[in-house]
Image (tube, rainbow, N blue to C red):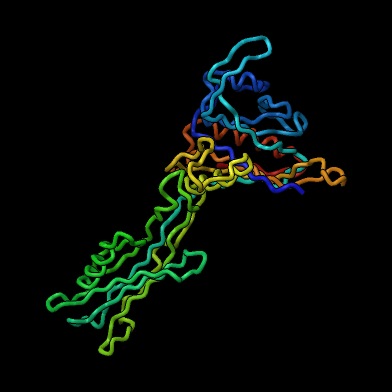
Length: 350
């Protein structure tokens, strides 16, 4: 069996080029000066734009194409030269009879974990040293292995919970390598921070990850042992949520599928690869198509098939509303075609 292949086509939130009507050919698309970068085009088995309302009876195979920022110059068969033609990136053929699933993954914003500690009732005594210990569970190799500890000692005349939490907040926020921010007043609000190694830009080596932590607040007794404070009840104010369609996630999918384009080096500099289509700080709705591809096996066993995933990521406003017409046209065309396949897939919405 061939290796499973995943491909992602990334579009922008724009109006569809009016010229891209049914029957428009590949030559017409790449030669058309006003076709925009980030347009996603659905093509029939001959790689012409499918007409409105097309079903499997019109074309049993479709392709998804993305207009990229790469350009090239070519001369057609009659000798006409075209400069600045836009290069297209194609999905694998999507055979209607081999589609396994068709679903939408609307954008869901990520949420950093927030834990709130209520007031401490004891021991609020001068000279008592308090210890805030954060144990991180997002180190996948060994959850809980990495910790950070912050200390503060109460002094006479400043013995309230606010004084204690102000001291711990100062120690925490003064640490340049902290992974959590401290806010609040009479409560201590701890919020996970973005991990810079994976949330900075398109060239980050690490995959997207988020800070997950457990909080322990203790004090040091007269024998030097750590004891739990009285009070300081913890509330999980905001659970950790990775969301869906955040730019870091789309970037990771795009980088992973580069191996299928022959780009296997993403760590040894200089990295030579095509320009990425993901846009930092953008939000994406996704359409995911799981399907099989038939092929003639090299093992003399005849025709076999291998699973393929095709992802269409469409930029959207954070509110989930598409300002341009492209997303609606894509979803409308796919819904009609997918409903006509043997799987009779339900319509999706983004």
